[in-house]
Length: 463
Ligand code: ADP
Image 1 (cartoon, protein in one colour):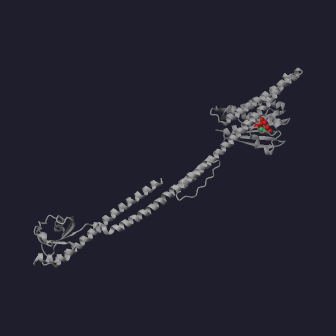
Image 2 (cartoon, protein in one colour):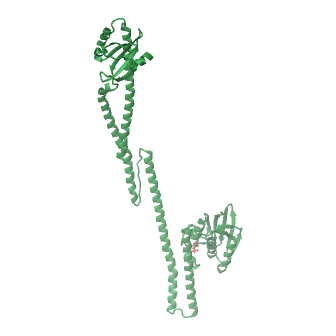
Image 3 (cartoon, helix red, strand yellow):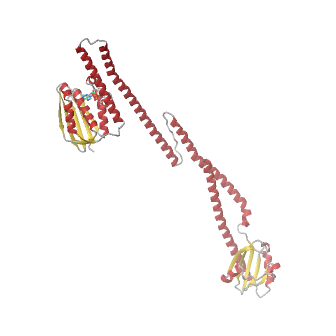
């Protein structure tokens, strides 16, 4: 890249020099030719004024030519038919043809004066011819002198041209080098910094560069790296959570399995001496199996919600009949805990998955019954507020301490582990509730006072 920049820089410079040089020489050449022509015309004016056309023209011209000899100037006098009357170039004038068809003569006859530039047949060098119609009589005067335009000066100018060319070339090489370095050096630095990406916790430091575009690259790189770092952190965090969940789930499953194994061993070893004891062991085994069953169901539910299962069947779910049906099925649990359940329900139909809605209400209502007190109450209220459906499940139960309010939505978190286990809780219910609420872009709020009761308020937008 450095080489390409360098090469292009020099090529552009050379082209610019060539172009400006050509324009300059054309302009100067024109000025030079115009000035010389004017000078020659002035000489012709003077000759016309000083010459006596009645006297011997040849003698006068010869006299004049002495003055101009050193300049190789040739003066010719013709009549208006182009016949040469006198010529300072004595050697030739006798054999001189008629000049009427010469360009400068034709022009002089037309316009009073004329000029032309051509190679002289006799001298074989480039000559400038200027002719002039005499104001004294019917004569044409012509003056000719060698003229090569700028070429006459090229030898004088050559050292200056070469010197300036050399100096410009050296300066432009230094500048091109500096310019290409000012681009490539930051790029090297940026790529060097980028190597840090291989490190665990890369910290990029870019110095401010001369060019906006390079700063932009540095800036974008930094932001990209930050984004990568952020998502790496997120991935790490999710990995940790998953690992934790896995460990917790295995642990939770191990407990009922260990109990079941224990009861079976007791039965095998004949520890159950009578039928009642046998029945007791059997029913404990059944209870543990049920616990395992609900735990596995909850784990499956969570993993389905987390993977945001694509195939979630959405229907119009009528909330009141769903809750009524749930209350009916939870009647034995309510009775067992001596809790009464009340409901006030505004008819609402939500576009949702029936299973998920059932799970949501089932967890909230079951908790309200389970963590209640004898003669306690559960109040369920379904209303509409603006464009949101509001579900409130309120109980007069044990309440949740302030420090646990946030944590009850975590997986496997239980305020009172013993009570939860006794009630067949998995520690996953509220975490599932939160997942479902999030799935429908809703929110959940918890109000609770220890010993007084808890109030869960769910808000879901009606789409
Ligand atoms: P669990 O299966 O243990 O009930 P949840 O995730 O449903 O798990 O609830 C987490 C914990 O929050 C429970 O163990 C319980 O301690 C507490 N909790 C949940 N709901 C209530 C409630 N209505 N009143 C008092 N405590 C509750």
